[in-house]
Length: 380
Image (cartoon, rainbow, N blue to C red; front, side, top):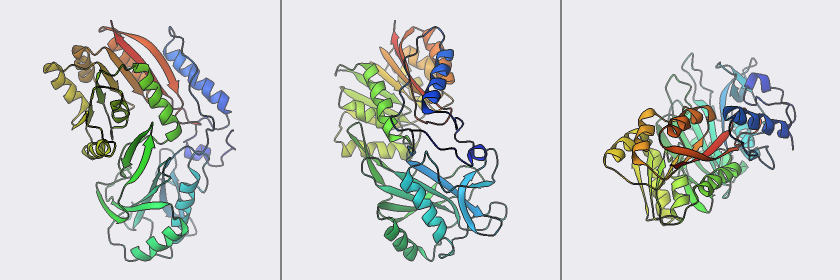
């Protein structure tokens, strides 16, 4: 199944591989990984059976068109000009419908779109996420003020039109920044959370929880990473950059003990709750910078058999990697959304006592240039 040509693709800039068949896209990503690792035979990239409507996290900016009608869409690449968007082939269908419903309701409920230049208006963004297995929907309205006089009537009408909505949250963001979410929130319907299941493990998600946007490929990504580790059951495992504890909790039912490390305190709170709802007592979480944890763990001579690492696109740090080498885990499973920075980090590990055993690419974002890669390193 391939995408129809999108009228706003060039303005949006999101789907860089617009116009390519999915088979061609996979080959482009395969060639990219092969070029990064010329001496390694990179196996066939793991793609999707249906590469459309995969994004289960969607956001829309609000503004006015020339006729002063409310529009929703995305910012044009490298600008703050809103490109009107009514349909997207990579965003989950229901979430797109909810965006358009809220956009149409705004005039009725006097929800003026926020104007950054004049610092006027109420609604800055609509931010949505949907769980894959439970089909629960979270609606986050990013606003300039918690004062919302028509709140009850708005909620009643929105729920009537979209009964799958489980919770609605107001997120306060007054900052002059491109970051969508602010730090203060107010739940106006439901619990402020939704639940999902991944690799047989249950997770609770808040608005700011890091959770992969493509649930189908996330299962493939994590399962492949765990399979690479070839766990026997008696291992002590470290899950770094752990987010809400996804990999660590999935792994915890297969090993003796797991430690999860993540700098985001809200994510760690979610991770601790997720351990409780899954009845996992062999996992501990620490809200600390991964590099700082690794430095102290190396000094304390902490012993881990397997280390999972899933750093941001910028890769890891020399402090993290040097400490990792000192800790001498038997296996390192490195998941990356930036294969170029992954190669940089892996080369350091190859020079310091490790050999690479496996490498595979996973297509998490069809129609874009992005590709994730996983590699297994084993201590010599």
